[in-house]
Image (tube, rainbow, N blue to C red; front, side, top):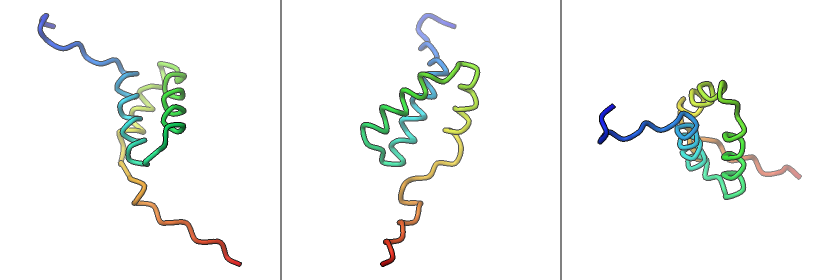
Length: 73
């Protein structure tokens, strides 16, 4: 690698970025985002490729999910 080429991001950094995008898609709040980061940081390195696969799959946004039915009285 040439000296002027950027250093490739670590797999954990790539997974964190993918997790952040998934949180954006789901419109997660600060607590959910913090928990997602903790979960990624606690994931054993040998499982990171699987986690990256999950986050890189089909992306859905919150609007793709139907609204919950109101309670029946």
